Image (cartoon, rainbow, N blue to C red):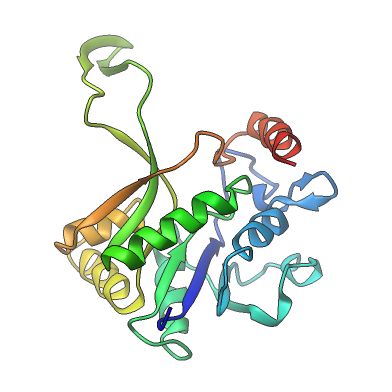
Amino acid sequence: MSNKLWVVIPAAGSGRRFSQSELKQYQLLDHKTVLEHTVERLNGLALAGYVLAVAQDDNIISTLALAAPEKSHFCIGGNERVDSVLNALTYLTQIADKDDWVLVHDAARPCVTLPVLNTLVHKAIETDQAAILAIPVRDTLKRVETEAIISQTVSRDLLWQAQTPQMAKLGVLKQAIELALQDQQVITDEASALEYAGHPVQVVHGRSDNIKITYPDDLQLARLIIQSQS
């Protein structure tokens, strides 16, 4: 592979749905923090390096035993996830080529597996197109507009649930996010910025155990998943 492979991990968020005081990425899963698990999984790939976008007052990150510390880079995150990602991409432009590939991955997804990561990377490189991990929606979906009353059953036939990593070329992704922010678009993930900028994004079938820790209950589920994977 001529172009290098980098990872961006936005880890500056407060995660208010998880806790008002505790950061989910620093919760323990079998003697390691969620973030340490996540970084270790991603470093199964042949990375040139990874960038963690962290809060300015973060005093925990420096105490962690992160995998491949010689490949670690740090930058200050922003108010929203998209701001943290853009800060990390801006940092990367100083040390990487605009045609290098970047995977953006949630800090709180510690269960992603190496075979799935490899499939994503190979698909993006092979097609020279952005790609994300996603799984088809399984459950019946209901639209609820007022007073918890169902107004419509939504067809799930064409719907996929987005996951991370989401992968694109550094220059393309940075420009797409900048354009979307400039136009005051709501950007919930990297794919939504790429879509807005007119770039095709393909889905790569992921796994349902690539969960994102959002609520306290998810920690126990992640613990069980990691134990079963090992």
